[in-house]
Amino acid sequence: SWAANQARALSRSTSYADTPLPESEVAGPLPDTTPVPDASGTPSPGPSLGLRMRGRLADALVLKKVRAVLGPNLHTIISGGAPLAVDLANFYRGLGVTLLQGYGLSETTGPITVELPHDFPPDSVGFPWPGNRLKLAPDGELLAQGISVTKGYHNLPEATAEAFVDGWFRTGDLASIDDRGHVRITGRKKELIVTAGGKNVSPEVLEESLSTHPLIANIVVVGEGRPYIGALIALDTEMLPDWLRRHGLPVVDAAQAGELPEVRESLERAIARANTRVSRAESIRRYRIVNAAFTVENGYMTPSLKLKRRRVLADYAHEVDALYSSGTDAGAGGDGAAKD
Image: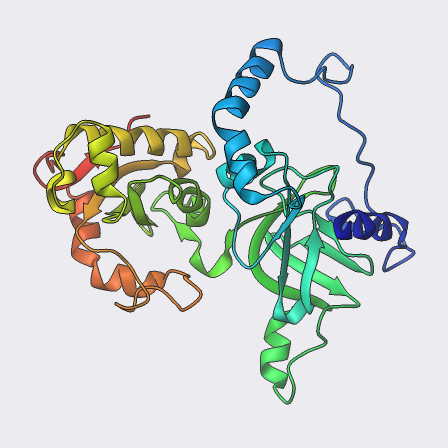
């Protein structure tokens, strides 16, 4: 398959530079992908018997039917262009479909990283393509250098100088690189939130986790200069009626649904799950339901469905202030405290 051929090519390629790389850098040839032993030093035995039984039941009731719809020839999906939700990745992998994620920009001539079929954590964008290297700046920004990285912008010397530091291209993305070389994108540098306590928070981590909830059409994490992190949530008006019916509730509009205890409890459980992915200082402490969705048509999303955060924060400044105002009743103003 294409993915298998690329994996072989990646694993046989040589490094962009022959000199040893510092621990903060990663480049081809790719690192060893032998399964990591558990704490006892022995390889993991795999899923427990109970988990395997649950898997067989899910396969018989749901997954087999989904695979029948997809057909017998779908084996590998390549994802790019936007962050891949972990839940979505796990769903397809549960179907037996290899779902690989890559990462790149126009300035890197398309993808500069890709996952391997035999080593693909769901939250990783993989390893650098051969001939390229990546490293992290002190502030966590991902820097790139290599044969597919642009040398600069045509006839724009000032923009070129701003985009590079010591010969490394500044991607504008925040990332982490683990000890096995997996690259994980954690957010955009320009959208980094700095709380009143000086904590740097990438809103995308929480937003991506919560965006898969069936009740949520849009979520905007806020907290710049504030004592803690909060969120504005717009309910999904298309999914809402079906969700209410399935939970034995009357079908009402989004404004009324936002006051239902069952809706709030579902949102708060989702927020609690999302908070487990970040530190307490980065977790959502309060949320507020807004009675409008953020779309391309109303100017709050780009054509590529990226949130225009500054415009949302400017137009909804009163909602953000209300979220943080002391003594706001959760049932009266659409404002609720997320459970720890």
